[in-house]
Image: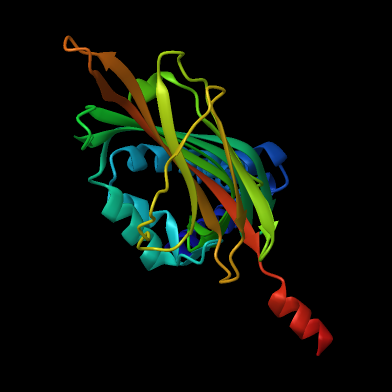
Length: 303
């Protein structure tokens, strides 16, 4: 409202100036000069895409410092994401995780910005790295966190500011690595989206050193908050470093995570001729699987 009032007063001043100089009113250069002097032309030509680019740059900056007051200012109170997290729950999840990691580094790569009057759809790739605040319980020191996601954001104009109204996460993978696992590339392959109550395969692959032995498990959990505690069932991984498991997508209308847990050990021959198995690394790889629910739509169509 303040901007509108300021703009209205500026235009009023402009017309007063023009009416007092009737001879010069038809001089285009004079009009342009007056427009420029009150900043009218600059405001009208301000590029929305520049505003959005600056917004995401600031968002990265405040995310790295976990400035919750600033982070909240980027979101509409009507915010919702495709996991069903509303504004309050989404902010709670950010705040609760703030003390678990340090040395955050975020980068948002904007792929496209589509402007439609008071709404903007922004397609981005997000990259993040961090360090765990605490050492591993397995005495492997601090771990590193590597995050990648692909997201479609919808923003709307609220007053003079753009606010994030929704987030549709189409792809997401998170790796937490400790010890020697930091030097290994882990790949967890799943479909990006599946239909509810259908089977899909999750495949974990990595290259294991010849003198090491790995145990691993793959489980799935619905994307809800708080996060449920899953029970890992570890199995030996073949030397080719490949482990597969088949899951059936849930029918509770939640997206889900495929979660791979890996323990890397190295046998050591002791002086007494005994063998000591030493844990040298652990890894946790989490991959998003979006689940589409069609049950309700089929029922409605039949009716």
